[in-house]
Amino acid sequence: MNIVDIHWRNTQRPVRFFGLDARSSLAIMLVLLHIRIWTFFTALTIMAVFWVLERRGLSFDASLRALRCWLLGVRRPANHRRRRRYWIDYR
Image (cartoon, rainbow, N blue to C red; front, side):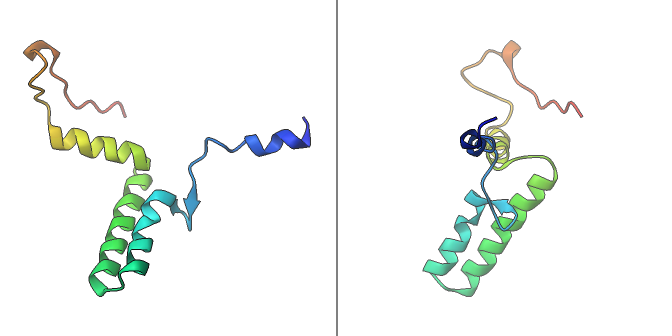
């Protein structure tokens, strides 16, 4: 293997910032731009929620998709009753 090709090895890995997904650390930027105690605790809460979800096996993207499915529910008005989707856990 050529030494030039090594940098492509980790291109699909998620970007990390202090052990968290880098996108969840945007809350830190919110704290830095608007320094208040409530923004600090909001940022901690956001990062803690996404840390717990990652510990349960969901990535940042998958957790947002799961939240969207939870908010929309099982009933989809555009689908017929036979094509209704239900939650399935394959673990």
